[in-house]
Image (cartoon, rainbow, N blue to C red; front, top):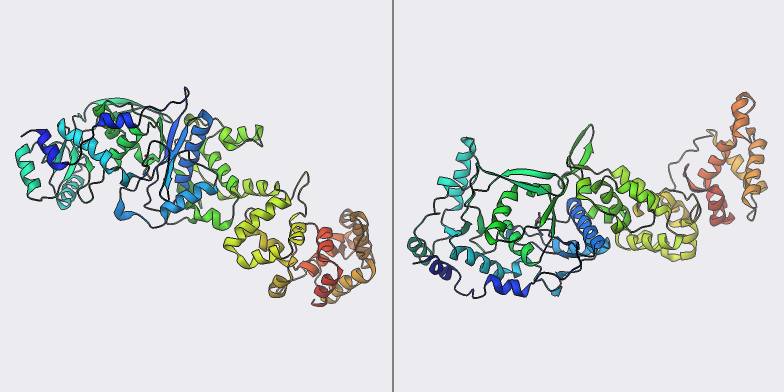
Length: 549
Ligand code: GLU
């Protein structure tokens, strides 16, 4: 009996060879320097900020170099697959404008290097596993899961290196006849790689961010094919897929760096060129006085749902991610305020190796800036798109009189220094609710006039203002001079400066009076420009509102 007999017993239906696949998926015909990259999430959870960082970096690398960006669904862990995770990945990428050149979704394959779903690539993996069996570089291992767990426990207690290597690799040298016999008897097995490595020897590996690194050679007989579903493990699928899909750069999470020796040995065994590797920085967050890894369980902002639910503009999220991905991004952005983010020349060397600090306050600032620069029409579209999903009642109000809504949104907008008060679309309602009578009727309770305590004085000031001073068509200067006159009439300084010089001569200043007017018609002490608000509300509605004081 030979290795070939064993391989044929395990894979009787595999007739293609590696050469066949090399021909089916030839080297890509791309210009010099073009990068072929992939975003390869596992649908074992919903897309998170770390995935987003990988996706964005991949996209920039491909775009900037005239290369290819593809999405691969790494669904080999079928037991842990989460319903809806794949949909969410594709929807999220679309929402952020990160369009893959090649992908497979909803039954459609786009690209010549697919299938792009690992569970559909079984025959390809089996061809590669079969080859390893034939050349004696893989073997069936009949250890039960319990046995492997026990070895691990013992290694832990004895403070030994974890894994199946050396004498722990019990089935490595099992005679072929016996292996075949066991398989024929229906015994369960996994296929393990048969490592040649010597753990005491080192090799040098050039990681794109961290530079030259030294690793011990791999000596683990790691599983390459699982017993339950005959699907490959991550390591083996990585080798097969990234080779056949002609990936030039692998961008992946920091947690994979310790697997480099395994991947190195696999690529060496097949004689394939290894792609270049960029291991992402860990994403960190500030938690009180400490800085820790962002957590999917503890931090809502770790999952991408957070940003769509809150209604952050897609570009704000991308800007924040780029800002932490590369240390010189912000500087580049200052010099190129209007350039698309993918024109940035991303450099793996400029990634933080100690971790990337993701800060929601910073996101808010970036986002406020972006929203402030939108035209009223753009903001209207973005806001109503968001509200149609997350606040239907508000959406109806916004759409009822579109021109009216746009006038509100346009206050202190479309000008040189626009107002920056919305960080996300879910902020908007809490800042302009009083402009909608339905919300006013429900929510205009529990307020105080803050600057003037005496309620009869407040009533008097407000009434006098509308009886005597307010004229609907006054221009802004005239309007303001009238507010000053009103202040004077009630013993408040018309200029703040004057009040500060001689406070004993006045009850307060014009600011106190205008605050009272503001609260009387909006119930808020902080609003955008009062003059504009008054014009939009109109006299009749304001009179009704002041009656309720
Ligand atoms: N499926 C792996 C993960 O989600 C991909 C790692 C890689 O990009 O190679 O962690």
